[in-house]
Length: 184
Image (cartoon, rainbow, N blue to C red; front, side, top):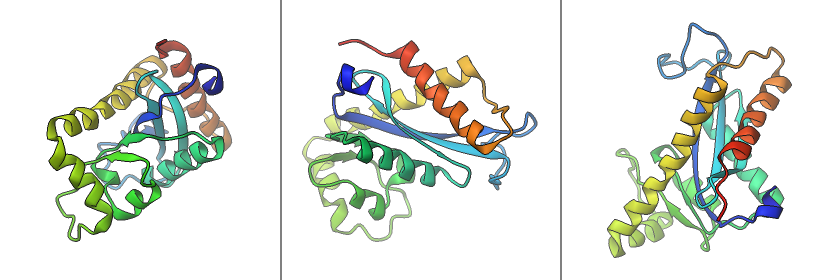
């Protein structure tokens, strides 16, 4: 589907958690035990509204992010820009993207050392703050996609085997692409 439709290279990404039991919700449990939740990170094409990258993890949202980035790299998808939330504002994450990729992220409050990796991001903020914030908040498209998917397909994973849990969450992303894709 990616090859036939074509993608813009303008992406946004976000992660979420799915509960395995009815009694617990991933935002209300502060410890977020790995055995009660599964984490998903999806990268969405802003122009098409289609998920182009998918990551799943039983350990953490960051691990799911790394798997989604690996999927994009293996498929050879060219990334012009990406918007991420504050959780991904580490220098290690910024190093994952080359100079040809514009990263739209706002640093965390506790960022102690800015470092050279932040230079491109800070220059973009200073040059055109309105354009930067407008592009940064396009990541809300990813969050609204998660919201629609959870309302449409549920907040709970009912499968027991780990491989089936991953496949169920991958299928939700595929169904999202079928229902919500926008044609240019």
